[in-house]
Length: 489
Image (cartoon, rainbow, N blue to C red; front, side):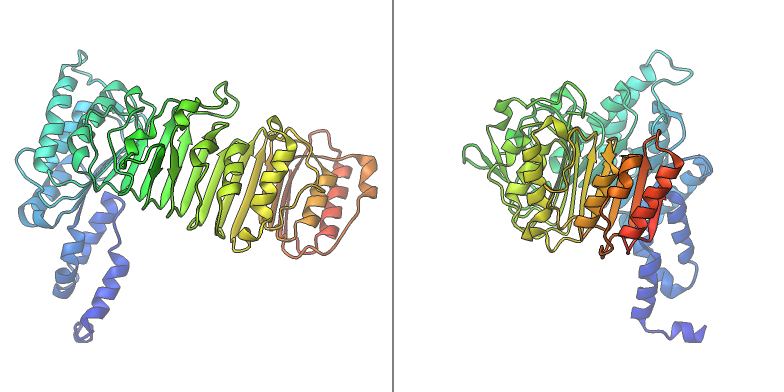
């Protein structure tokens, strides 16, 4: 033990740095508490990190309510000033009033003040929060909770700057409670995440708001409280409706222009699901503004409408390193025109491609995966589903493509083989469904020069004979010398 104590202090700190990462659950946090009993040196070094976070967990198999009450009261008595992060999780079914009253009892809301707490996470899994108690089926107890709980929470934790409300349940009571909590803190937050469509009543977000994650389905969210575009570093908006107004982010007098000068990550998930009648161009009035992202590094666009590119018409992405785009061709076409730097990760997912002119499809994808700008790419992936045009390998110039996935489509085996032999940077190829003509296999031209393709997954059409399937597999193995994994269904 003398040798252990004689170790330099920085060695002890290094050891603890591997052990004391942020706990993700009450059980992990409780394991961290055991470190305090190892020795006095570790107790002195680990104490601030261990008690910088506090976990409360209502889950089967974890600590009982009484055990958590005793543990938190001990923390509140001796180490409350160290607590900066508070996480509350629910994965078992409780009524809303019971859930809130248990939290209030454990944290002693209204009696104990957690003045140094900067971050609050409340997580509830799906089907865990019941609206009504078994006893109170008239809603009176819930009304009391909706009024008292947010007030007591704010009084006990007035310094919260990071608020994460991850509630999957969306009954009107949980939405009302979430809205009340968010509205009390929103004007001072630097970080806000909310995964349910709440009603915001405040007029302005904090000028220091750096991360904003919101579900904007609610009618009250079509016009967000004013937020400074200059301060945002991460912006994620989900279920963005046609009538959504970007004017909330305007923080300068330049007409028709909003500059997100510090934004690093942008995620936009539109409320325009593929195959629905909503797949129409959005109203032009929604695009009276143009958005600019000079420092953007990661871009995700999901289910974009046909003329989404009007928002980004004059944008140039000098710093962009990761791009994920799914939905209509317009988003990929927009990005193909705007990209101005080598990309480390480019993932494009398109559906019902045949709904748009094939020449435009080849033009956009060839610019994305065939230009010199993609030579620095580590991952270049193209996923096509419900393909409504016949792929012509002669038109394809996807020289930088590393992964190609074609699903819910009918692709001739000859086309698969031609693509595999032409795209020399391709590493992975997945095709469902592949059609094979018995009389055409022997006429296919075979090569054995592919340097990188190692994985091929093919799902043959149901009517394909076993003999034909085996012959096609043999042709693939003979044509692709680098093939290591061939998956056939």
